Length: 484
Image (cartoon, rainbow, N blue to C red; front, side, top):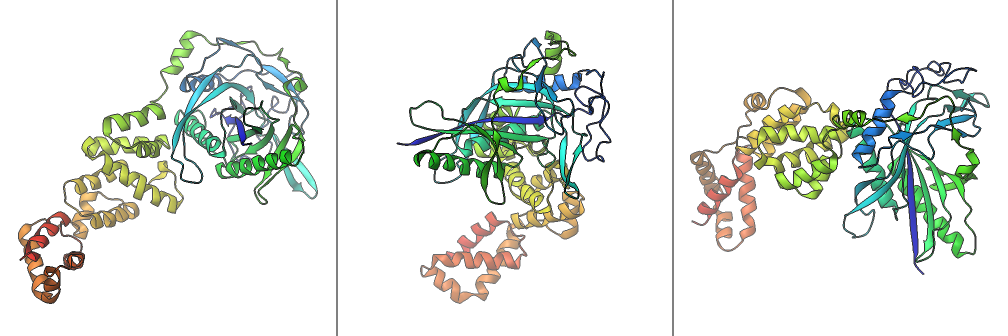
């Protein structure tokens, strides 16, 4: 009987506030250990938490972006458990009354293997609740010892919990990537996975088709989409093999080892009642007024899904191009500047260059879109010269390399390097006449039926013109002259 995979994600997103969720201590990453741990962070007796309004606004912003219900009143609770870097012995979180309720996220799924076509899927979001982050255990800080850094303790988190709607590693990765793009797009998190700003816990279970849900195991703290895919694939196969060999799956928290490509159990998995949640007596219920809701709504940008739809409907781009251009807000904004300058009729030209040459060069140089050394205005200047026939494709590539390395304007570089395309029909005819006269034997072969020699003549003509001949005009003249 066929096995089915069931996956749900819990994503911890550090919010981009300058101070912690319950105190005024800084959240700047990379400071010396324990230099940003104030009295609240280290839980000195008698300290009281004060809620950060910016964290609440960011949570609301996310909820609005996924079409979720925003609770007019939510409650903070104490989640009780011991961990060395949790000084209070409990974490302030939300339990039965979170700030963000049910919502959904539409994802574009690219199958990881085989010939399956991309498809769209809606993943339901159960809730998103505010909580504080714990500190960090630093293993090997001293010989044979573990240190505790409380700089991160109290950093505001939004934990985003999905329904178990995903059924493959491809879907889980697509959901995580879409969520990662969204939190960066709306400006609530920098999403830096290397720094722990975006961490995923993946709940995986398997079942035979038609049977109830199986026992889940939770893969903790995945901070790489590649590792997520590998961890899920390994865990799914491990669970199937275990059950087919007569074993039993026990609920557990597990870790993925990227060096071995395997998962291993860390501890038995707790349920909610194990944490003994109760309302935090030091924090009043959080009331969100209609006016506050509207103030936050007014700050929302055009969302990725709406931007994709506009590109397809108004600019005639393919779904693939629209999806690629909205992989980050910076890229989409870059494209908008270019297409507004070059004209909607040249939207495909703009998309090709940004998705192609610009993205490739960014990857080669290890840069983000926001760090692109070629501004959208500079690229637009180049694209205008491609569109009006001033430069050829080969000339455009040389021009782009110069723009990337040296800056300047497209027109200045075209003039300085002599990149202007030859579109004078008289000059092109003279060039073709000379080639035909010099290669009479090849002309005879072409006229006897060897049509493939046409590329030979094109190559000679482009070489003779140093790549500057207008290709369309050149082809037209060559066909006419070679026909005799």
